Length: 284
Image 1 (tube, one colour):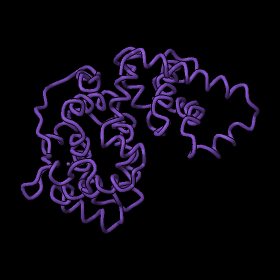
Image 2 (cartoon, one colour; image 1 turned 120 degrees about the vertical axis):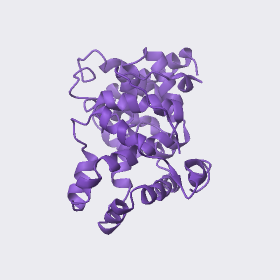
Image 3 (tube, rainbow, N blue to C red; image 1 turned 135 degrees about the horizontal axis):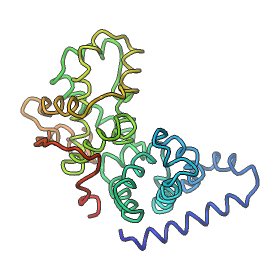
Image 4 (cartoon, rainbow, N blue to C red; image 1 turned 90 degrees about the vertical axis):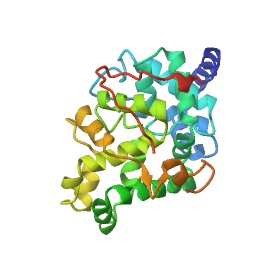
């Protein structure tokens, strides 16, 4: 991917938006009816989601300084990958990238990031692969936090209830932005394993609280994490988590992307600025 391709697909997106604006008011019904057959129609859906992207920052909403560039990156991507289209949650990922690089580079990083096996499995809603990721996660969940695992099982709280949103947005919607960016730093370096290690760290962090909750309250806590969660707390919890089960690492449990049914060891250093520091692999 090069910056010239971004301009090409942005032009295609602009043509689509122009055609939408010139058609009748029945376009929304037509788009909804053909969304599965034509994923490019998801261009119209982007407008509905941007307003909900980091609302407290007030920079991505209509009239804000980043509204148009976020709109452009997401629109260009849907034309670049019409087979994927736009999926709710993508706007948060693109927004984080735009806060750290210029528009064309953000598009390239966004497209390469979403092309990773885990992200592609979730954004294309590949149920088989998603279930394989959930199953691998539960192997380490049971090994790491057996009491909490049993409590979740007893209350029928399955991983999809909380993991989907975390994975879809790479924690950028669920965690405070500065904390999420620190997670991204390690994720960009170590890959998908770190996403699931972070998930276990969150469960570990709220272990005592969750053990005294019922299904409803557990689901509410995990889908709306405390806004005052500190990076030091989370990364202290992450350092206590090792993805290893019966001497098997994540990659051995998860297996290759095409197979049913992937430990990560990192050195966590201090970091102050909320930025994605290592996006080199996203540009490759």
